[in-house]
Structures are given as C-alpha cells and as structure tokens.
Length: 423
Image (cartoon, rainbow, N blue to C red; front, side, top):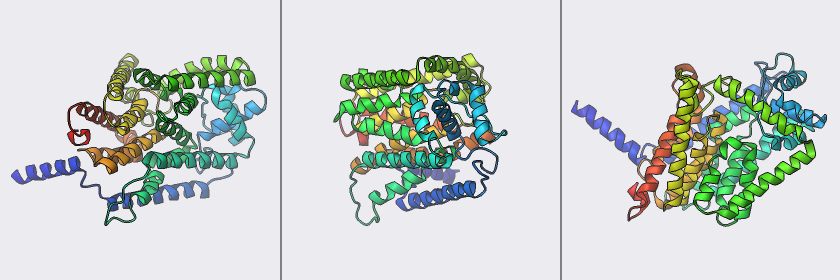
C-alpha cells in the first residue's frame, strides 16, 4: 500500500511539474500524429472516385456546402442556400444523388467568398481554400510565439519545434478532412489579439470579420467593454455594419430574411436534436444531451457555463495576469460559451496553446501548465471517437479544467510576487 501511495504521489508530481512532457517526446508524438494525418489524407484521395471519397461523401465533406452555396450566388439566387431542401438538391446535383445533406448555417457575410470559390473547379477550390487558410493559421501561430529563447544543449530548439506541433495538432487533420474554416477562424482571432493594443483599429476590423462565425464572438464585446478598449469595439462594430451594407447591396434584403428563417432549422434539427451527432459537438449543452438531459436542463447547463465563463473573463481581463493567460482564456472561453462548436472548431485552441507555450518559455512554466498544454493539444485526437463509443465527452471537460486553471492563475496573480510561480 505504501508503495502504491508513493507511486501515485510521484505520478501527481510529474503531472504538476510537467516532467513527463520532454522535448524529444513531444517531437516523436508530433511526428507520429503528422505521419498518420498525412497517410489518412493520402488514403482519402487515393480511394476517391471523382469528387467523392470511398464512402460516397464529397471530398472535404463540409466544403461541399460552401461550394454549393457559391453556385447559387453565381446563378443569382443567393437566398437559396438557406433553404435546406434547395441546398441539398444542389449538393446532390454536383456530387451525386446519394450525397448526404450538408447544411448552410453561415450568415450572409460568407456568400461572397463562397461565390469566389465556386468560380473554380471543386477540387481546385478546396485546395485553394485549405491551402490559403492553412498558411494564415501558421503565420498566426508564428506571430503568437514570437522570438523564443534558445536553450543550451537542446537542438533544434523551440523555433524548429513549433511548426511541427502546429501542423501535427490533431484538429488540423480534422479541419482538412472536412474542408472547414477552422484555420481562418483561428488566424483572425489570433491576429486580432496580437493587434489589440498596438493596432486597435486593425484588431477591431479582424474581430468584425469573425462575424461569419458569430457563435465565437459572443464574449469578445464583453471583454472589450470591460477593459475600456473602445477603439477596438467601435472598429469591430463599424466593420460588421459595413459588411452588412455591402451584403445587402450585393444580394438584397431577402438573404437576411432567409438567414433568419433558417435559424429555426439550425436550432431544432442540428443543435437540439443532435443531427450532427452529440459526439462531434464539443459543448456542455451537447454533453448534457448526450447523457439524456432534456432541453430545459441542457440549456440551463449551457447558460451556467456561459455566464460563469463571462464573469471569469471580466475578472481575468481586468486583473494583472499576463496577456498570454488573458488571450488563452478568451480563446478557450469563446468555445465554451456557445452550445454549438464541433471538433474542427477546436482549432481555436491552437493559438491558446501557442500563447501559453511562449509564456512558459519566457517566464518558466507554472505548476500544471505543461500538462494542461499537452491535454489541450491531444484532446482533438480522441474527443470524437471516445465520445462516440463510450458516451463520455472529453473536449468540453478538458477545456473547462483548462479554463478554471487559467482563472485560478489569474486570481493568484493579484497577490504579491511572480504570478507564474504563484499559480
């Protein structure tokens, strides 16, 4: 018994210190995940038939709804993508009668980009979309990390390791497999945070552009108001207004009516009934529904999560915590605050990891920090499959624990002394 207790104590100490996450181990895991991801992508392409993969789904499955919507815009019918039956019919016309339905749930802001992509052949459009946004994501992560101190005796050093871990981050493969927009969302959010104080107008413009994924911008205005960043707030608001005017001028008012009407389908079928699959949605709402909670209870759980995160973010951002802690808390909190976030949306965690990793290199890791970073990096790898086979979610719990750790660290930073060591 004494030996068991000693082993448990040693294990807990390893987790607290992060000694189990060595640079060599991180490199090996990163290489393994990257190799597996590249093999998976190669397999999808090698076994594809025309525009469809081996299972009959469009290659880059969710990108099919963007492309189909873009073709409607080019046909002069920009409101059609918001009609589920019409959208599905167009997807079937492009990819075959057996094509599953991929709904269009974006605001009208995204129609112009969809139309631009639809001017190209499908596979070229998919490659251009994923390639361009992947580059933006990598540039954003590099900017977040910034110059890192070389550590003697460790080659090739953190400057070389970041790109491997950024590319091998498991949500990258999920995003590529779905042809989704996680790279763009992560890049816009990261660059907005980096420009927050140095270039507030630019930061506001980037935040305004995030309106194409409005569920992730719920708490950003709260933080801007709570910290008195009015130039950023106004710039973001003006950007959204100008985009709305441009969309209305280009496509008319019908697109807004169609968008609002489509919200009922998104809310009831996709979210409340779990049409996407509870195991894919990484929220406390989905967690409650997966465990057979009724809608009132599930909404109550989500409301408690959102309000708790919102209150904590005000405290964190008004306090003396490092900017890395504040930025990571806002990124993770923005995912927790919405009932609808899928595993490819966990791309938002990547810049949060980068902020905290750069902070650890510069100041030394706080207790539990390395383990928290490892858990955040690994969770997209197994979150979907583990929940599917066990009905035990991992994404939301890991994010909750990480957010609580960040809040605790921020509160401890209010006491005298180095907040990194006090956490």
